[in-house]
Image (cartoon, rainbow, N blue to C red; front, side, top):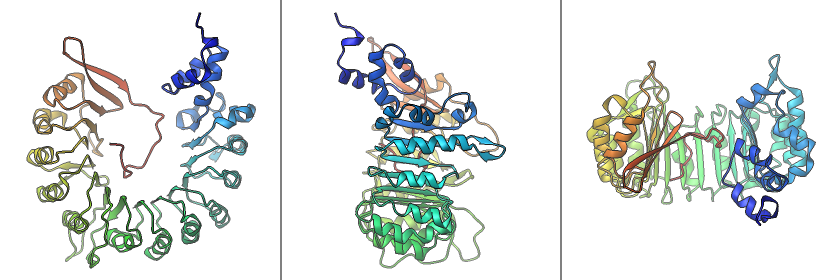
Length: 451
């Protein structure tokens, strides 16, 4: 007779790989066999976010659990610290000590993320001992000593630095020189002290770089980026911030034949006389990049904190240059100017599978009519807009209307919920609903999506 105690452990681990969160903890309480099978999955990722911080120290942190049970450390592959509990406006020293002890035990870490400005020197010391560490994301507001210690990590493949200080940026060329054999993706977010000279020196060490994302760095705009990408001819993913500048585009244009993912962070301002508008900058930038004949799979554009409409002319240029290859389109904090433009995108983009846009609940009929022009659209993501007044939430009858009018649609994500299309044995439309997982690894909005 088969029971939990005589099922092969490899089979149990395979079954439990489909579970996450509280389900894993519940399964571990069933029996000793289940506990043994679930431990590798349960401790694969040590995640600590705001909801955990609110309950600390009443609820033990995952780092304290590993420190108390060192045998679990062998299973840890990912560490993700998104929030640090505080005491009297200071980070809790007990929590930081728990983290440091756990990091010292976890020898098999492949990714480490600390997205808060709380990186003790002992954290960096622990990371230096991790030979398998390939993915690193840090809040980069570091001292000179911390920055120099960090540059000893030479095996990084994917590096993300948020809010990096001048101390760290000045050492970036030296650091990239040690990582040139491994680094494939470099992301610099909101590094106000980064300038074109330093970034150029760093990129000169990375001719084989595949992903470059420089967003919110005030001294490096799209013109600077287009000059610098001459160092990285094999780029597949590129993100940059545009500005309303009168500086000319590079001539001749940089060659980017391998580019597949493009993200633009459009900064709005009050342009001086003779400076181009944001709309004309976007159009000129798209035309400039298209001269390399890249086959874009993904295009993302964002207007920070504004509700702007993309012009019909810009949408037309996007269609004429990349209609046959685009699979993912994301319009963040902006609107597609007219229903005709949306219809044109759905008709001409014959490979489109994923669309991120604000769903106009009040004009859902016209919106659904435009989407119905696509026979390939599978996923629709409702993008939250930065508006002063709340907008209606997508309800089940409106979801049903979208699924009915757009036969190719399989998934709608809106307001923390995932709606899916299903059919019963009589071929009648059924709608599934689940909460959007809150434990998924957060990524920057400009990073390439999984198609």
